[in-house]
Length: 172
Image (tube, rainbow, N blue to C red):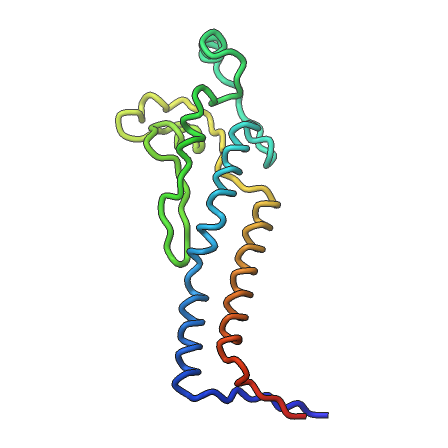
């Protein structure tokens, strides 16, 4: 048995459908927009778990800083005083092919994540910070991103072919 499939819309209409499909398949901003909230939550969980969610072992606070923090703020998790860092996690930018998350308006997140450096005037102040990475993903988060991207591409494919309507013919 032989199946003969043919697409039979007018050439101009078919070209437009394929052009729109190609444009949509190259623009993942809807995926980034749908994922950014989940990714921000993930970074917040990393901060609260002190890196344990992805198997990181963070160096303890210095004795002096730990005593100061305990005296002023009680027994809060490491790097949690006011929640400013966690509350400033933002989608900094997105393009059709990428998204960038960051913590804006604070000098110390890079020093905490990478260890030993800050920016500008804060560079010297943070030079002794040990690395405590928190912008990392669990396998479940990677699965979520892949599933979200896959669902998006499936919708784009279905939309493109539904735009062809009854214009796909089959003959046995």
